[in-house]
Amino acid sequence: MDPAQRDAQGHQQAFNANVVAAVEMLFDGFQPHGRVPVNVPNVKINPDGTATYEDSYAYNRWSGQDGFDYAVIRGAGDTYSGDAPSDLNFLANARSDKLASVSVDGKALAADAFEVKPGHTELTLKSNYLNTLSAGNHTLELAYNYPEGTVTVPTTFTVSSAARQMFRLYNPNSGEHFYTASAYERDVVQAAGWTYEGPSWKAPASGQPVYRLYNPYAGDHHYTINEGEKDALVGVGWLYEGVGWFSAPNTGVPIWREYNPNAISGAHNFTPDANEHIQLVLLGWRGEGVAWYGVR
Image (tube, rainbow, N blue to C red; front, side):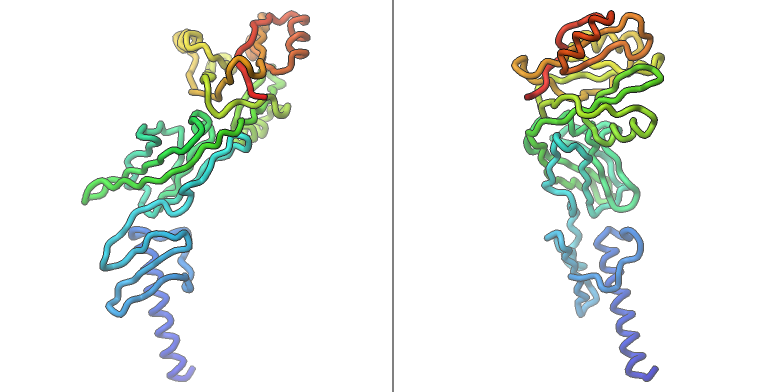
């Protein structure tokens, strides 16, 4: 290698090192997944040794002289749609080990409503939680504790007003039917051996809450819009799992409720199919009327 090539290679290596350092500084002193490519676009090494970076998300510039702006750089403004439920994912350029709290519309979230990966903040809002939100715009806030003080990083997302498809699964061992608005939960339960019976009804994006409970002794679930029934079941040992979905007004599609007095597990069935309701009653199930309403 001649001296000119060696000098060019040395300059390139030094530039690459500066690019990596600049991007690492963008991510608050730690590195994104893997090594940063040496040809990272939109990075400028200034004559005084500082760096300026502007990424493809129309983000916030970082400069060694002007300071650091924390922000959500991916997922801002995304929409959750109940008719194709999936989690919402966000990326913030701040360290997840400094994350103190996550809130939506000013209310701190329970730990089971979201998930955070180590490193820079990759946060997932789970569809089971998103199903409990009303249609419209919502504000997500990430609060970080740094030695210099607390930093709050806000962003927004939208829950669409579309109806949410409900899924029905059957456990051939216990006889229980399970209902969920989460495609992810549907897939997990199916993988565990349950039989997926297909879409059942559509639930509105907002309305009267349908409460979901779990019996840790019998291993089955129960669903009700009656807060008194929910509280009574919790009082005898059932676990309250939150709002599963919502009921439409009584002008909607009736979801019938039946009770099997001979069953130990899976004693209740819920269906929008009036013929199924009638057949179960003829077989000895007790018709308990309309549990709640779906949308047409």
